[in-house]
Length: 502
Image (tube, rainbow, N blue to C red; front, side):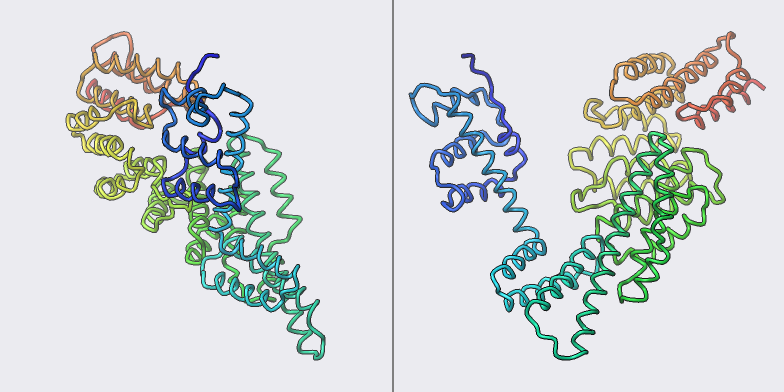
């Protein structure tokens, strides 16, 4: 058989393990409770030597088998079974890790087992401990309310099994547990169903599926959220603003044209942010900004300055660290980029400079150098320091830069401003080829950038003294065009040419 470099799901999984996780997995395999096969442990120790790439020329089936069994004849079935068994143990290890790391969730599993074995005293000790842990956290999300629902209902049904009803006051207090349980599950429903409907709206707006807008509107009509929230206020001490924020979010995006719902959502969120978890603040504040971005992109009518509003929201979002989530502590580049572009739009260049110096350090470490260079290139371009901008731009390694279109666009504009028309035309040519060959680029973005290149090429011809194209023609055609990237810059350059020819 031909022996080539080996790949398997277990090695793909082990690549994702940290060194500490790898050490714990070794201890897991060494425990007879989980694994009593020495050959599995031996296989793991062999694989560990190839961590983290698992791409050595010696990482082949035959070589791995030889390290396991010496000079015994190769048996493909035996080898495949061993690898499969190790994979199953790795999955079991991750499950155990998840249980260990989820203090509240694992405690609920324990209380269920205690009830099943009649350990009611231990049950009450553990359920009190869970409640103390949950209440010590002032941040509220769907999981918070669901856990409180489980505590109240578990207590009620255990008491129903074990306690004798002797006094009316006892009946009243037990009834209150059930009412609290109803309030908590309603709160969970409002939060999670709102998030789900909001995601449906966002998805549907992206792909223009109008029927789904009707589905969400119907959902709001079926469940009278005002009455649900009123019920919660009447029957519980739950901080209702947390629930109201989600309802305001859903109304803002369902009845998008009515800005009063946006302002209600914004006010409710800013007042209740301190009660939300990191993930919830990330989600909700992102959606607040999304509302304004959608307004801007679609050209919808707006009673307030949309760009200044986005600037203010970005400031809140960044300074409070709402860009972070439990899964990601780094500042995502798309958010970072949006802040830069917004600063340019509202002409807050000093703010932009301070933002770059402070928050480029919050990006994914391997991205920092290239993005810093791009950021300072963009800043110096806006300051009309074109040679300095070009110096920063030339420091970027194109293959490692995330937004290659941004880089090409900026390079073309710098060449134009410096009247370096031959390099500019070369950039246009490579720019066009990039647009044509990039299969991952959405068609609408391809059109936007191709149209930008068409007008940029016309401007260069005029600057070069071509008499075939006139400024007035380009101005009229550009004003009528809708799908053009960087249209404002093109319009500014046309105005400059008009003044010179006047």
